[in-house]
Length: 283
Image (cartoon, rainbow, N blue to C red; front, side, top):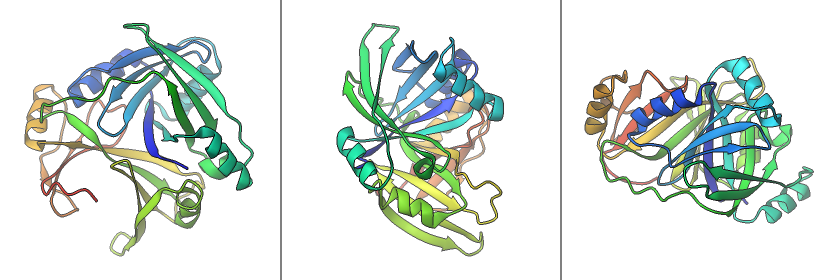
């Protein structure tokens, strides 16, 4: 049913500042800046090899603006949404209805302020039983596209390696993401010294990493952080230092064959890791 992790959403109060900061972190400008007139929101999109990132802010009166403002009032700028892609949204609706979840399809569009190109899509906003109180929805793009990622500079961000979600109930998460959404569960392992259970769901060359904490106070799941893959972490480190971005020294990652560094500033409060896979093996 779900064919991709289509994009992630960071809710921000000041869109221009967030664009400026992420241009420094990623090493390139957004490929799209536009407005959702019917929602009262503005956005900027950064495209990568396997997905795109959306910076989303309120601008005018509208239901979207009210919603994003409520998120920001609660948590400030933060990683707010995960969007799952499908190639057939009518089929997705049928599957969800057959699983006892009554959902409807809505439509949306945006215009690129640079060249006035239009993109259109269809959405399914998910009930709490499926979203587990995350801002998550299903999307099928129906018209228009983003420019293809073609960055060759080895210091710049290449793709999303993984997104981290905290949960109180790993079994229920599996029931939804594996059994309803049909996303492959590649790993289910308990890390004894952390006393945490970890799930790895693999889709379109990225990982949804889920960490279970039985002692988590809130029942709802929580989007936590992002790990971005680079071709050369040494070159990425040098570039970020030159941009006055605070970053930790490079070290070996927990996973064999990886080098990592943590970006400590200008991330809109999103825990952010850079990772180089020195063995170049996809899992």
